[in-house]
Image (tube, rainbow, N blue to C red; front, side, top):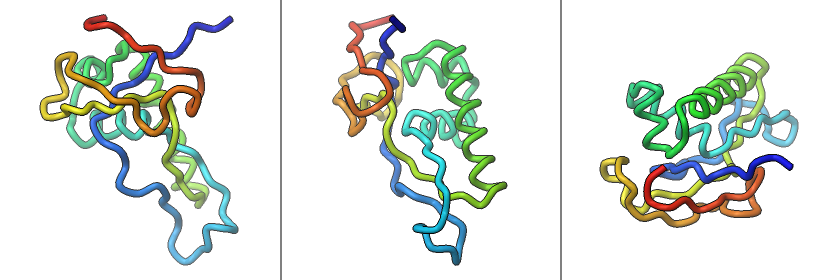
Length: 130
């Protein structure tokens, strides 16, 4: 039996759920599903420029797990761009940080839209600290 997945902390939900090539109807496109935690990894590493270790702490995962999430996100985004596929953003084992002002510290969390039973695996709540 595999180990249960823990929720990945995300600071914000995506503003858009789909991205697609211009001029092609969504109904005829293949699509690639990017999870919310993969988008958060792209945001932290690419947009905010954080090192993997710092970004992993913000997401409440190990550095190795963060690296795997980031690698998966890069592959999916590259596939969508190179092969002209639609990119949908949804799901994943996440918890939404309700106090995301600084992204550090344990804070308080609320289940995101991909809470237990909606992502791959189930989110298990952690206590304060790792």
